[in-house]
Length: 374
Image (cartoon, rainbow, N blue to C red; front, side, top):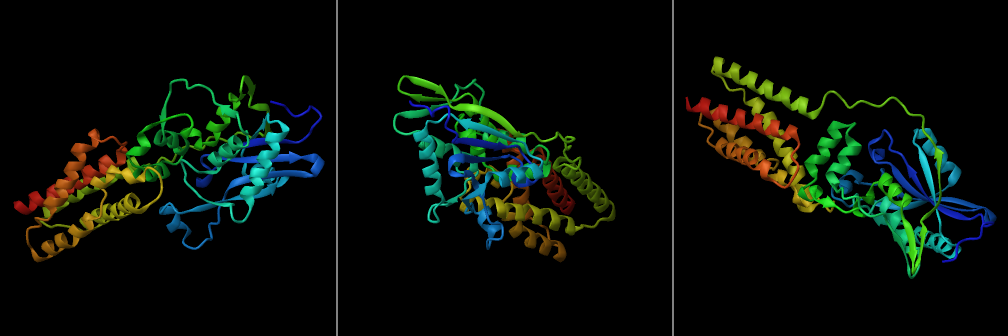
């Protein structure tokens, strides 16, 4: 394989940006740079462009129908933006020969054509990082491949990988856990975990270009273009989902004590609990049945978080108001008990706050049933 001559100044590189403080920047970012001083070109190709003002953006995102696009910006503006964000930027120059480099540039320009620049975003399998990797691999040409380092034996899942980057935001992490299904807990290979920018960066550092009997390093050089000044580590919020649900459990127990002494039922408590359960169930059910996001279609939390409480609730309130026995709550009690018994056996990670919430629902429901029997 013929390398570019030492005097040739054109090059292509992978840019990896460190995570930021905004939710969309928790995992970092990847872009591609093409620089050819002789032609006056120094461009950054960015597959992470989206339009938040697009009609029904949130609805499309929930449904997994979000479209991202390839954008181009001049390199100085790209660097300035990430410097202002306080993110580090590491450049890895690709050791491509002139044909491979120009093939990569041609593929990027083809991708930027109006008919091609928009693509259906998929967080795990088709994001700004995997798009950059795939187009670099396509630029290798016939007979040349990128060989990544051998596995060290450690395997990870999508969920545990995401947890590493969302630890600073317990509520955000909890929300993701409510939506990801059992598929997110399956162990992944090295390639599928390259959806994370820093993972691809590390893999590129040890990768090689293999062409016949020739094996050469993938990278010509690595340079830190921006080294962000380390800020004081942002501590995770003390008010975590676990603490919230523990407080909720204690409040429900306190209400039960008051109800027992006053011989009254404060059904407003059940209205809040079951409405929250049912609304969360609507979201889980919608994602499970209709969303195109990966791994959400196997969400076993549907056992607990489903729309059924929204149907039980009006019947229960009617019975309480009319002074009748709320036998319909046996259905709620059975559903919650089924979840508690089966949860440890499910092939899916169950966040601790959900165990506490289930215990709260079970205690509340059985108290009403027992109190009504007396």
